[in-house]
Amino acid sequence: MDRIWNQEPTSNWPIDFGRYIFIGRAVQKVGRALFGHEWTDAAPSQSQTPEFRRKRRLTVDDLWHNWQIIKALLSEEELATITKAPYFSRPPVISAEVWSIAIPRLNETKLPFQRYKDVQSQMLEWFRSGAVRTGIRAHRGGEIVEADSSLWNSEDLSFRFDYGKLDANRPFEPVDGLPPETLSWIFVEQESLGKTIPDIFAPKPQAEKAAQSELLRFAINFNEDFPLHTFPKKADLIKAIDRAWRLNHYMAPGDPIRDERSTFWRNMPDLIATVLLDMDDRRGKNSVRYKATQSKLIGKKKIS
Image 1 (cartoon, rainbow, N blue to C red):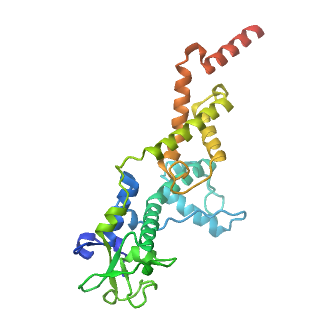
Image 2 (cartoon, rainbow, N blue to C red):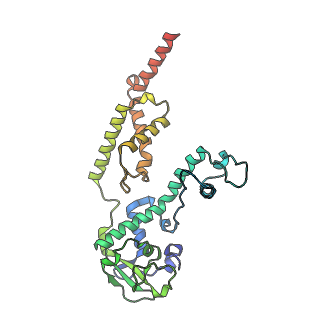
């Protein structure tokens, strides 16, 4: 039996009926609400991305595994920096430059599927609490029967989101490999979902102010602790900001300012660097970098 995400939704998914919508459509709706433009309806159809094997002693098998991932991620031009091993029983030797491209790119490719998993986690929380009600219907058709919230009280129910079905007689058993006609479709009540689902357009002044003030405090402290003239290039400044942020902030998945997968985290170091440099430039001859440059010139003249 195929996952519902490997099918054409319009032709293979069950129709919505009455106050219920099919769980697949509910997933798409929640995904758009949680992630906005970053969500794509194709996200659930992506398979779990393989991970690089990292351990102290890598076997030849581990090296080939990592090489296959890198080949899929990088273009021929990007792979050009790799040197070939002098014998054929091992994969090419991966340069530091290639690793610096491959690791961030792998993290990027994992994001869509991770968003799908995050949607699952959020919906399971709603289902278990009873905030959002669900129902089931026989494969062939008939009445949609409301399900008790205890039907969602289990640790591993991802198969319900993957297949959109459960076995009414053994609801907590995986359904992969079972005849489709013996299973029941899963539906979500529209009214309770609509009341619970977050509105991405709703103002969140308190959350925004908290994030802004924390970011402002960090930028001010960084500027005091690390004078701008000590960074010859903007790229050096960006790296220092990213390093300082990681040292002073704990990771919290889902929190936009503490989750390194978020767009905010990825853009934040460059944003702060740009603002600090721009503010310094506006001071003209009072600029920290201008004064540092003048001091160097005066020092050179004295020596000469």
